[in-house]
Image (tube, rainbow, N blue to C red):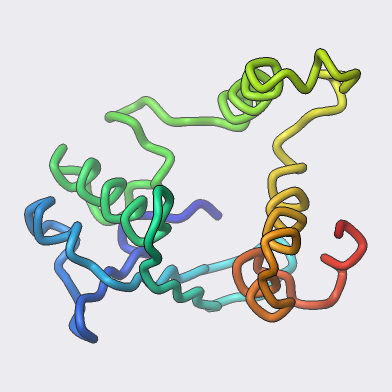
Length: 156
């Protein structure tokens, strides 16, 4: 089940922001909660909470931009986050194409990586590995990657 606009809750100082607030207000969020209606492992009603982090990539700021883009188009709360504009969505093929293009641009294919073995599934595993190499503790890796067991250790 895809994340929808209504599954994203942006927070500032412990107060819930309206997803249809102006972008400048949404960008002041310091935390985000994602509601997972149903996961492929059968878990229902789970939540993920992230706080803002400094640096070039912040999950709170990324989701603030995504919510703002959808809300500014007047799209309803049931709109999937994959929506680019009415009737146009990012699909798995788009993600695969982008990941493989990134592999080419970063020279991975020049170093012997087979482009056919590079896929979107690798994002979760490589994310766990990147966090491990960055010195992030196992509990945080499990939270960020939504690992419910120590299975992620196989990847790192």
